[in-house]
Image 1 (cartoon, rainbow, N blue to C red):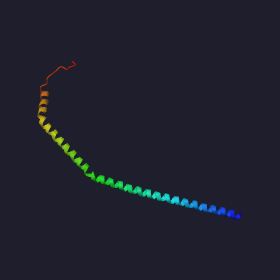
Image 2 (cartoon, helix red, strand yellow):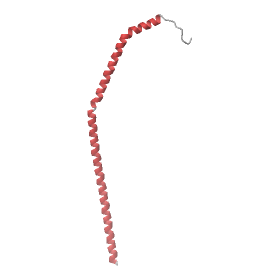
Image 3 (cartoon, one colour):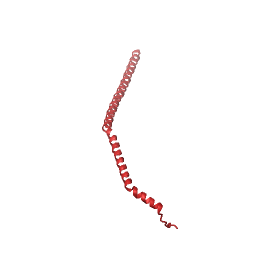
Image 4 (spheres, helix red, strand yellow):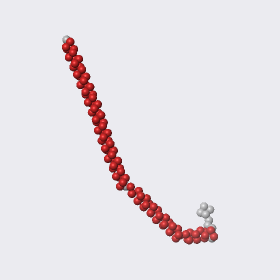
Length: 111
């Protein structure tokens, strides 16, 4: 009977070693999977940063050209406004002078 108990204890010890080996294997696999996932994340991040840098390089001059175009358009509009001012200045001054020196009294529509 003693040999049966010894056999059970030996079997139990072997089973415990197998369970410990399985736990170690699982832990190592989890660490390996985590390291692989981090590596993939880093590669993906580098790829996206490279794409962003390429996009920024391609569109870097776009803002400058838009700014230059806007400035040119503003200058053109200012020139148009100044030309219309110069063209109509004398007529407006004459209208104002006539309105102040020669008033035309009119009856208000509510009176």
